[in-house]
Amino acid sequence: MNAPPSSKGKLRYRAYFWLMDGALAASAFLWANFFVFRMTGLEVFGLPEIVQNILAIFLWPFGVVAPIFLLFARFMRDEYSEQLWRRTVVILAYVTAIVPLAYFSVAWATFFALGQPDDPPAIFAWSVEQVKWGNAIWYSFSVYVQMFIFIFQFLRWRDSR
Amino acid sequence: MTDASLQKEPMRYRLYYWLMNAALVYEIFAHALITGYGLVPGDLDPLIEGLIRTVLVIFQLMIVPLLIIIPWWRDEYADLLWKRTMVQLAFLMTVVPPALLAVITVISEIFIQGNLSNWGGNRPDWLLDPLLKETWVLNTAFSIWVMFTSAFVVLFQWNRWRDSR
Image 1 (cartoon, each protein chain N blue to C red):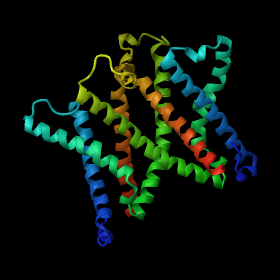
Image 2: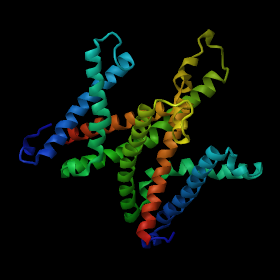
Image 3: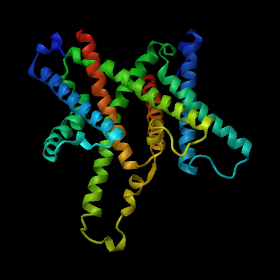
């Protein structure tokens, strides 16, 4: 990912992009881990425990704390990243409004048309699993802030080409 | 909220504000129903119940999402309000869940599992009940999405009201 020209400014402006890259790496790892776990049942790619512990030290601050911080840290954004941030929030708003609705519509339409199957296909199977409310809030929140990172980095990557 | 200046605008712009107001009324009505009855009172005439359910579905699944999604429905001012609202919503979505969970965790760790005392048999275990309740993933996702859309409508109208004063 080529750094855009504006990142030659003050240290805190550059640090914003460094943190962004760290957050992207951590978020991408967490999502990859989630999908691999769901599909194969392999936990943390079957890595040895010592590696898992070292990774956890990195994943927690970068995957969850950094996105919250980056969403707020106005003082660390120069003009370019502030503009990127605004575009990201708009796209995030559309995504948050549309994607769940689309999923519900497809799921309900399928259940309505076919009846609710005892053993639904994988894409619907997880939606009828049981989950604790506390965990559900935590997952939604993590997905939201990590989507912020993904969209921001995607826009930045597209600008840099 | 004065709509006098909007009279000469195209129909769809006026319709946007009009439906926004209707959506606010819907949110208050729906959340009152959810708080009071779970969703719909049980002892209603089937016709009235069907009518209420239809209104709920039309607003929650069609009108409110369309108010958020369609860009050409908003005039310049509504677009500005929309953007401000979404920035506020992004902050809220980022702060409220971890703050909520942090408070609950502190309560849980210190007061409930910390065994400071037995509370004279009145230990507030029920504080954690809502979070430990299990339900479908689809159900939680839908509820959280409903809260997001409701917060949009309420915040949008709040910003508009503050501007108009």
